[in-house]
Image (cartoon, rainbow, N blue to C red; front, side, top):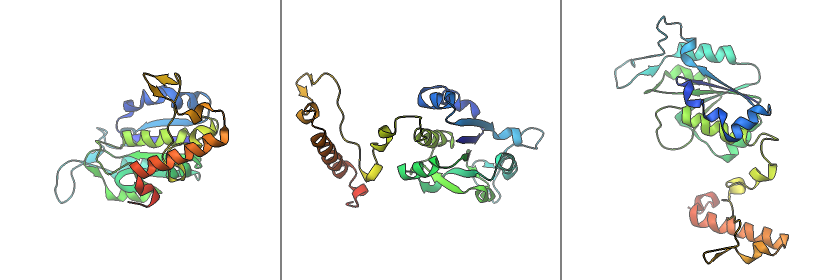
Amino acid sequence: MKIDILTLFPHMFDNFLTESIIKRAIIDNKVVINIHNIRDYSTDPHKKVDDYPFGGGEGMVLMPQPIFDAVNNLKTEDSYVILMTPQGVKYNQKKAYELKNKKHLIIICGHYEGFDERIRMLADLELSIGDFILTGGELASMVVTDSVVRLIDGVIATNSHLNDSFNNNLLDYPVYTRPADYNGMKVPDVLLSGHHENIKKWRYEQSLKKTKERRPDLLGED
């Protein structure tokens, strides 16, 4: 997979690309991630990328020219363009699995007060990570990138993400490690029994219980 991210603040991604699973996936050639400064595509002598909104209003608006030129320069027949915006569809694990199957993602990070409405026509998908406002789309694009890259074959063990929360609309079951008794708080006996069928049943029941208590909306019970 290849991921190209368009941003006004490329240095925000420095640590993101050099730590943990993302770093290993890049080293192992599971993914190629390129960060592009939108200003590099500006035709303005001063690399201007924003201007005041027509009709008045607060803040600055991203101009179409740099972003159109950037996307057109990067886009191929395999590209899938994502625009990070609070007005997009809400991101979830199902969408992460869908994006994992794309060969090339181009992610546009908005900033300032917003972007020229005409930029929307570039997008195959407008995406939001939740009903709140961030300073820009950079952090949101990192969330999407991280959640997709970990699903790529060979990045992590398949069973690790098959049992994640939100698969099958259930939250993850409780997990424990050594010691079996910590300050009187004991690991459930079934997990120490070695009986795999009983453990599997217990984990499903615990996932269902936790989901009903914390996220009944996932079960259609809100």
